[in-house]
Length: 244
Ligand SMILES: NC(=O)c1ccc[n+]([C@@H]2O[C@H](COP(=O)([O-])OP(=O)(O)OC[C@H]3O[C@@H](n4cnc5c(N)ncnc54)[C@H](O)[C@@H]3O)[C@@H](O)[C@H]2O)c1
Image (cartoon, rainbow, N blue to C red; front, top):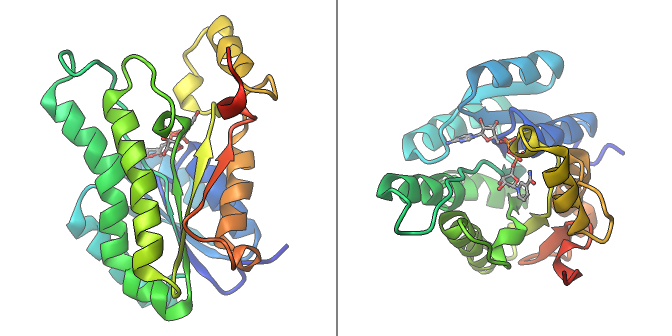
């Protein structure tokens, strides 16, 4: 498939994990891809690996970084077709244990960034009939101890996706994927027992792969999903329907 030939794609948090899988997928399908991330080493590494990918240092919680990124993409490509809003921050704790700075960081990187990205790129996306895909989480819909800040941010992200779909229709489609447990560095330090426990929450009885989320992101960003907007697509191995 070559669904993104001639198109220009921005992936936040694209230096590793699910974001990097999205970068690889969009590049393999013909896009020029901008990796908007704060990790210089990982960003440089993926840009070296993929000829049509370029790393741009962008802290997605900073409006000025978004403005600089938009300037670079428009100068180099003259268009922005797809924004994948994937970067996030995660800090654990019930509210009485969670420092205020941690709460603010999680909201800024996980939720506010989706607003800032749209603020910077909406006119360009609208000009070409573009698409936005936000990467949410099952924690937007299910509550576990310690996830107050993250769950609130992801729940807000789901509401924001629906709102953005309304604000920018019909010019820009806005959707979300909702991953379950995906094998990225979040799970790298966990014991095999903990990983098996996570996997056992799914009907698939295994962890998901970043490429499986990227495939869903690419579908929602593509013209094949031309009649899909304001939607949340679970990519969770059936996690949400399993009762334990
Ligand atoms: N891995 C999972 O099991 C899982 C499950 C559900 C949802 N998700 C969601 O998927 C997305 C990606 O998760 P992942 O597991 O691939 O994460 P990851 O930790 O592997 O990668 C996250 C990337 O975001 C970048 N980043 C962090 N702060 C940033 C900032 N301020 N500005 C720009 N970039 C920043 C990091 O440098 C890193 O490259 C997140 O939105 C996460 O909430 C992941």
